[in-house]
Image 1: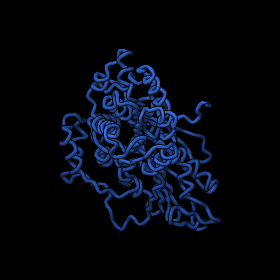
Image 2: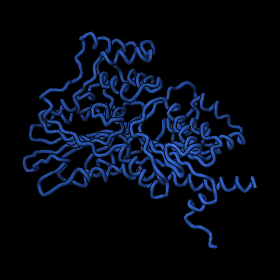
Image 3: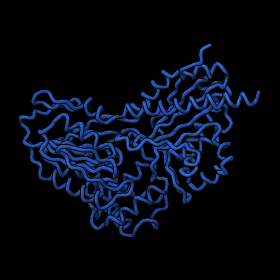
Image 4: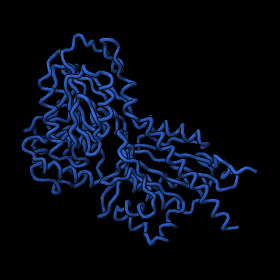
Length: 468
């Protein structure tokens, strides 16, 4: 009887794992940047409509397109489809391996998450391009997640190498993306509104695919076209919070301290001078989570969206998800099985070890410990950009048998978590989530599925039941 039960659970888990992938892919489809651009950008004769704003192209001398981010190549292709030969010139910066063929707009591939010389060259060329724009020109700016690293233009006297080290230390210390970008903006010659200021007096229309909690425009890609609300004083506060004074290059710390003392000009602040810039958010994590909810409901799950604004230490957030899964099995709260819990956002990993992985793989690894033996439970965590940390995986999938299967393969889950070494763990179990570049980026998506392993549950999951 016990062997039959185990066989039954394995079959139900197999179907649930397929469901989790389908739900994740539905979220990805909703974040498609081409569809998003076409939803907000259309040409009607000689009038270009971007969101609620209209631009009479007969009064426009030139249209320039610039941008950066993991989804920017697809966004650029969609803009070319709308405007065609009306685009005079353009340049975008994308992550290595994320370029696609474009007709007019040039592409430079650059480093991410750590900036490199190619990204610096792209940023410099973009600033030079928009500085030459006149009052009768239109500058279309395309921004998506990853734009911060892909637009490195260090402020004098900071070197690119010093900024690279600073980015690495900020990513590793567990700082949030808001905190990281606050410092990035104050070490940059293009971020924190400086690109928008350089384009004056041209009109600027920014199409933005959000990858930050709350869709804050001044945080997405470090807000190159947005007047900056953060200050040098906040930068110093971040250094103190994470004890980074001695960990960062001396010139970086000295520059930030000089800014706090008023010896370095602050980033551009909100004022009436910003009437030439307009922004349109064309996609966000909330849309991906909502589409995932619809897909889960269609598969027969009761669904609950926990949040599309998740932040915090990855392993702690993951274990909370695992605890809710166990609560569903124990008390049918907050919803009864078959249940799907959904969440999105961007958690952070404080690097403590020397392993290989990313926040989504670490999420699945930590959650696996909490759902161990919890009948039929599955957790999938994936980055919508298709890349989780410095790996070729988008994330990973775990279930209630992951710990047991790991033990049979001589894998110590606690040791892998301690070393931030999720990638080899899931690779050996063949449980990595591999999508390749998705050409989009709206943060992460977490899917938790819980079912009763009864025969009735198994039948409900089987789309092709055996004939009686």
